[in-house]
Image (cartoon, rainbow, N blue to C red; front, side, top):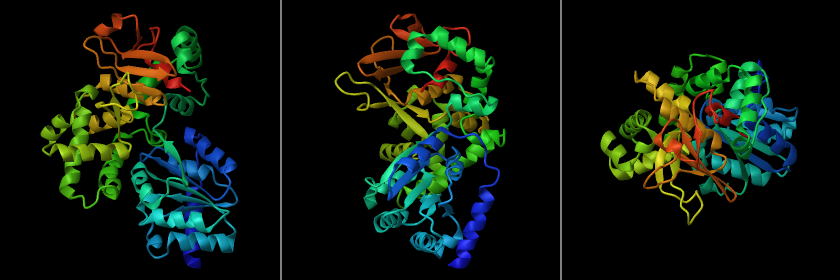
Length: 403
């Protein structure tokens, strides 16, 4: 065991070198949880590959913490439970940063046992969003505090790009005082319109700041989601099904968000409607796509029929299209960008006979209807018309500074 522990320390010493000074939004969520939660505690940081989960773990390292990357061959010989117990008893560590947890077999049972058996440790887990489906089987839901590591927001991107920390605004402030907010944004970032165009296409993941040729990196990350992460969700999944799933991903990238239906997916890719439903659900669980549904007057926006599908960030769609030799779909990018930023609110779409805005956002009893881009519905006074321009009342970039 001691030789294995020394190897783990070597890995830790290597990965903590040259950490960036910039920090993702969920770094602060982890920090607050570690400071406020009393042991025993367990935190789960889940999200798409490449969003910066590992770096945020390492940036939160303290003297009493140790980093364990559990996808190595050593953890096939030594159990996670025994490793944590040994380092706790012999080295005095009580905070364990456990990375790539979804690659460790039966991780949910060992985490449950560690939580129950040690009354003064903190466990911080990081892995694919697909692993969340596993937590219910081991009764982990009441033990784990979930932190969702989403793709980058525009305000993070411009901060990383320029070194300036932007001011952020509530949605109601943006609706009621757009001219004032636009002026403040443009004074601080005179090239904000061009930063937005770059961000939508390439800036969704922080790997952009380590290698600007992100398209092959992102498409490779998507392949790993399909062939590595998703088999952790689907039992006895075949290679043929995974290849069909790749075709679904391409089909969604080529389609406009509002064109989605399970019937069209199943007929276009060549599968049953039931299989299409299962594969779409697993793409959602893996954090590749989001559903946007019709708001029902008799219920909250959360209870709806699914009618639109968005990638969790336009950078994903752009990379898929570019790597496939297809033309970009700027209309879809704009809607995905907007949904990514307003998704913190109660948001849906509206299904009417005439004049259908793209989004309905509910804040308490107030309802806001948003139309993205130039459409006939833009003439309606009840719609807030959002344009991809720096010469308009409600420019698209403004909503990247939501708080």
